[in-house]
Length: 140
Image: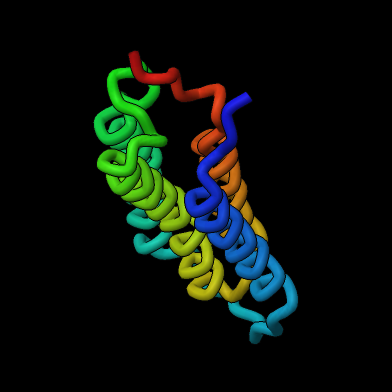
């Protein structure tokens, strides 16, 4: 069985652990009570998060499609950089949704409904984009 690229898995693990850190931070912080209604900024953040979700799948197909079809080989030293860079871009978009959740949580005084969906979506995307070896066909 083919082994996964350890560099990509280390990056993936670090980004997943940062999502958990965001959740711990927001759930343990103490905020002053606020009666203000959520503003338009929450809607803008939701729109950006939705766009980043779609873009992560499009860029995964564009940047890593050759590896999944078998046209490119992630074990080839000349193509390894493209493999790592493609995953970093896809992971960054997925992680960015968690950061948007952190920002939205801070803006809404830590209310769980304002940040939890973003962190959950971000973690789900990170799990969907994990670079498991069976997803990549060997090059012909």
